[in-house]
Amino acid sequence: MAIIKYLGHSAFDIVLTGLDGSEKHLLIDPWLDNPLSPVKPSDYRDIELHYILITHDHGDHLGNALDIAKLTKARIIGIYELATYAREKGIEAIDGNIGGRINISDLDIVMTPAVHSSTRGSPVGFVIRGRDVTIYHAGDTGLFSEMELIGDLYNPDIALIPIGGHYTMGIREAVKAVELIRPKIAIPMHYNTFPVIKADPVKFKEYVEGTTPVKVVVLKPGEIFNYP
Image 1 (tube, rainbow, N blue to C red):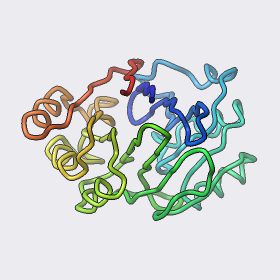
Image 2 (image 1 turned 90 degrees about the vertical axis):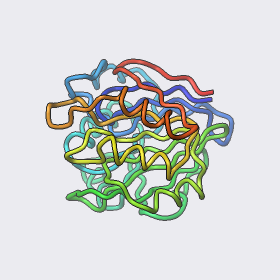
Image 3 (image 1 turned 135 degrees about the vertical axis):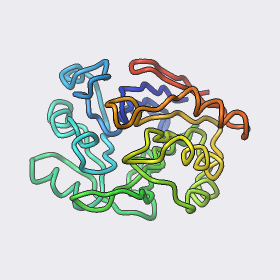
Image 4 (image 1 turned 180 degrees about the vertical axis):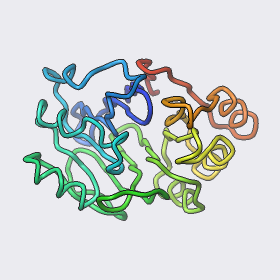
């Protein structure tokens, strides 16, 4: 089971069943000041939130993560340098690096490479596996051939893929990424937040579904996808 709510740009609110059978609530890249976001950081004040995953420290991804962590006591998960920065701000954080499983008991989380830039440590993607579903958030990234290994190793059910171009993959590259990863579901992200990353998710859907067995789910900010 997974409930995936799109918050605009690359931000997602996800609830899934953990490996221990308990319900886990997490945010990824919660830049909730983005012009498309249906929620504000203060909306999380009275919500039980377990983890906040941050792919890299650019302002449109680190976003409101530190403020939300202070409100909710959720633990931040990020690359070593970014987690260290969060601790310096008085926030509990779990550091890791690209490679193997992060050592927590309730979810399998692996940081993957992302071809991008960052000030504090390397940019990453995340593979998140609960009891019933595996989700790959690619982060801000260009296309890279090792995405095929992510598909082979982790067999994600759902892939969250940037399509906006300029700073990340555009539609052409994102379609190839889906071919390499081979998820059951692809959800486009990181587009139409501002003019330079304008892209048509319907075109992405048509290309992917016309050439692969993958289903594309296009979410407007605030919409929810329930899996399965």
